[in-house]
Image (cartoon, rainbow, N blue to C red; front, side, top):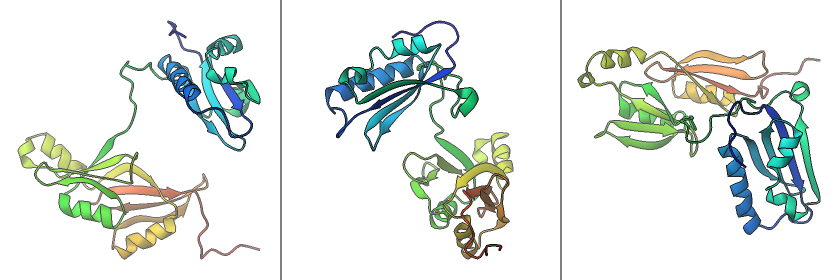
Length: 251
């Protein structure tokens, strides 16, 4: 496979390989499959890839101009030669099912595309006190807290976006210092997902945190709550709409 000039295809195709028993061999075919998938990604065709269970299998979603090109792209798929119990190539009917993903292909690797949101800055007054609050009240993990380098970061765990707790210093000079101070105590735009916003509200009230909006049901089915840290930085948290334990069903 090689990269082609011009616009990338927008049709989505699904390759489904199902295996009987315990699935395909794990050693050499697995390595070749990894190379095959990485090449699809390199040329901007890969959308998603992953293993299936019960029964074991492998699912690949990719872009192609048409079915003929999709078939050509699968010529080097190692699962084809493993004689799976089922090997299917299906077109994703975007008009009927919706895209479910962004059908616009990402820029090719090495072209300067963004790959991950790493950290978001939150302006605080007392950095050490802020670290303790985010740890003890929100239950976040302290990644680093170094007074000497003035670097403090917290997160919800491995693989999640970190919050950089930044305490402005006059020695930064103007206008940087003034701009940072102005950002303190504002609506951050940061949204957390919670397993239960009712329990989160109780935890926040127990910690005497300021709640700017109690738990509310939203038109999209979830429930939200707004609250601030001790510096007045406001956050929103939501859950998927688990019912309140105090609610009674209407007859």
